[in-house]
Length: 138
Length: 163
Image (tube, rainbow over all chains, first blue to last red; front, side, top):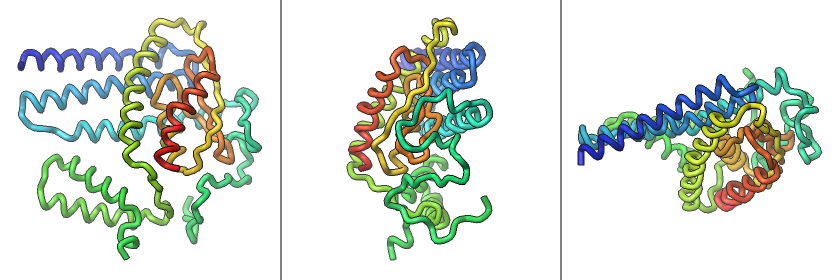
């Protein structure tokens, strides 16, 4: 039984390492910023995930303690990866993007990144009343 | 009164669970501290988040999470294959416009995050009125299929959860 567990943990660690490596290769190989974004947001999630599952199994089977930190790391990773990717994509659009390269929005308004700054973002929050006073320091 | 003290009950619950997981053991002292934090943080941040998100169908979240996890694993293999096996000249990156019917900000945020985490797609921007998302695909020979899959696989399920 312990031998089997060792094999499972080793397989998970090796697979995780391979996916981490593929993510890094993608960063070097892919041709531009937008395509390079895909490598770290995807190929590495399974890389980190594999290490975390292996760590949980190891502590559970060999140390007889259940560690919850791995679950938290997974949760934080799944929450932060899309937001970072979105910020990088928006920064890239601001600096190098041209609106003519992008497809039509199919609505009356343009993409938020390229719209006139003075133009108010139409509230998505249809059922929300804005807070009484807006925060002034940003 | 209770509503004033706990403007966001889900957030309070989430903070308590997160704190207990961080401490990594069940002790009364840390539970007390978790409840204190779970009360104070929602109170302080309430002005920035005036509305409670409405969950029409909380049980559907479990099915949604399972589907997204499965897709994340699948997307890892697909993206790994594209990175290792396709020469850059054969790569067909594409911008796709996805019109969205979701209206609540929480649902749109979850949809945008899901799109970023799943097969070869990254959410890049939103239109000024919040009615369509700009998606970048790593390798999309057929952009319309990507749009239809997002709408039927994720948006329809989120619609059932949030609206």
